[in-house]
Image (cartoon, rainbow, N blue to C red):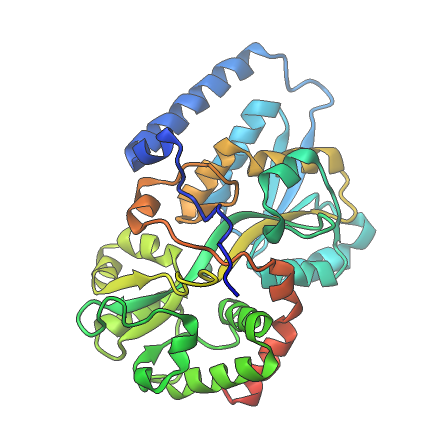
Length: 364
Ligand code: FE
C-alpha cells in the first residue's frame, strides 16, 4: 500500500526559519528565548509558599532533559523533580502503587511505552494542545502516552562497498544479495523488535517470519554490541551494511574516534518509494496516581510545544514530533525523508509476536 509518511512527511518544512536554522543560529535563538523567559520570570511573583512542583520519572539521561525542565520552571514557576531510572522504572512505579510520587513518565521506544500501558501505571489525558501538537499515529488513542520525538531505523551502508541505491527497502535486507554482508545488534533489543513488529503489521506473520529468516541468513557475524558497534564493524570491513537508529550518526560525529566510523558510511532511509522509513519514538505519559496531575499535563503540553520540541529534538539528534518545528542544521543536512505513518499502537500490538518469531527462527 502506498502511504505518504505523515507529512510531517517529516517535514523539515517550508518554514523560512527552518532552512535558516543552522546549529549556531538555533543555539542563539534558544539562548535569546531563555533570556526573555528569565526576564519575564523575574518580573513575576513566583515561588510563594505553595510552590507548585511535578515529579518526573525518566529513563532518559539527566543531561538530555535538564535544559528543558529548567525552561519549563522559568516559564511557569513549577519546580521539576527528576528521578533518573534507567532500569526497572515500570516495576518500581508498580510497586509504589497508589503512593507513587510519579507524575510524568518519560521514556524511549514504543516497547517501553507499551510496557507501561500494560503495567497499568499510566492514565489517559486528552487536551486540545496535546492532540493538536502530536499527530495521531504517534500517540495513544486514549492519551495514555504521547510521542515527543521521532527516530527512524536506517541502514548505515559502507561508502566503499555499497553503491548508492543498492539498498532500497527493509524487505531487501532478506534477499541473497546481502548474504554475509549485514551487521546488527541482538534481535531481542527493543529497536529490532519494533522493526519486526512493523513488518508484521505491513506484511502479516508468515511473510515477516520469512523476512526474519532471510535477515538472519545474511548476517556477517553473530549479532553483538550496540548500534554504533555495527557501524564500527562496517568501517573495519566486517560487514557492508549495518542497521541502526538514525541519531547515532549525530552522536558518532560528536566523538573523535567514532567520527571515523561515521565517515565510513552513508545513511540510507529505507522504503522511500513506498510506505516510508520505520518510525519509533521517545515519549511520555501521565502516571496513573499522579499526585500533581495538573502540573504533569502542563509539563507534557510544554514538551510538545515549539520551544521544547526544538530543544529536545536537537539534544539527541531526533526529529520533532510536532509538524512545522524547524530541524537543526545537522538533521537538515541528512535530508528530508518519508516516514512510515503506521500507528505505533500497531507496532506495540505486534511486539510479543515479533519476539516469538525471532526466537522461532533462532535469531540471536
Ligand atoms: Fe538509542
